[in-house]
Amino acid sequence: MFKTIFSVSNSKDKKNKIVTILGLKFKLKRRITHEQFLNYLNKFVDIKLVPKATGDLRKKQLLELHMMNDLKNICNNLGINFWLRGGTALGAYRHKGFIPWDDDVDLGLMRKDFDKLVEYVNLTSNKYKIIYYYGSVSKVAKLVFKNKVGGVWLDLFPYDWCEYEDENLYWKKWLNDKEKLQKELSFLFFRGGLFADEINEKLLNKIEVINEKYKNKYKDYTEKNAICSAIEQMCVANKKRVFSKNYIFPLRLIEFEKEKFYTVNNIEKYLELYYGNDYMQFPAHVTGHGIKFKKEDIQNLHYVFDKYVNIQGE
Image (tube, rainbow, N blue to C red; front, top):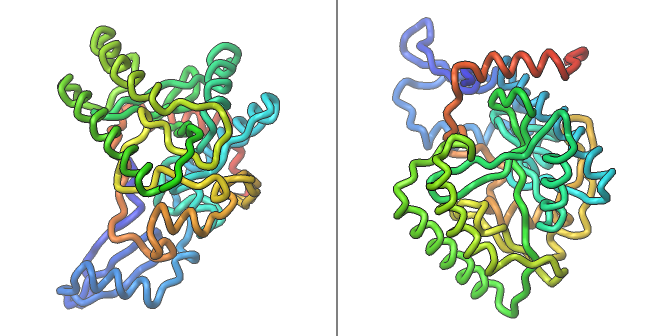
């Protein structure tokens, strides 16, 4: 969908190659390895100074920012909060906004607040709806424009309260149940990458019966000493999904694209647990999220961008 993230071209002398990452140009020897290039970046380039995205990617980010502000107003009216999580929290901490090459927004809510939000938006909003996107072994709730999805959405991730004496044992139990859930779903031979209304109703019902079985094992609205990701709405991806309460709460405000949003309380520890201690370095690979955009998505992106976003000053 976006072509401005990374490019490689030959230099005029043909003895070197020019690598361009979001406007930063590097002249490298033709035989330099990926690992050598990554080491060079992390040694000599401050990742916080990488310029913002441009073109359609930046339009998508700014449109998502517009949605975030709308969602903040909705949540304020409902008396609930969401927080920046995952790559969006990393972007806020490291770039004071979107990670320059990122194309989505990750937001967390406690399940009770999530359920309240879904009901309110889907019953009352003329602008938005919350729908589910199904991968082969997981599903994700997405806030989208009601009439024009356009490949633009906010990912909403609910969390359950939990408690334990040994965090590692609880984490292993969660992982074990998640693997069982994924195994059961895999037997349905469902090939992921579809929204709920694109899936055969009979198959969707089978998927949800399995999801509900594991969801009910962890669903908990009562405040406890820790939280865990909603097991039915998250891939494992070798990232931390269980956190002590004091890492997350009380939520704190952080700057994001010159706006203020809530994020986790101990963001440094959270990012270390989630990404490892090298979260302030360039990643080994810059990739998308595996969602295939339809041809009309670009047109829809432009339509909703022109309708809702004021780009003066950008």
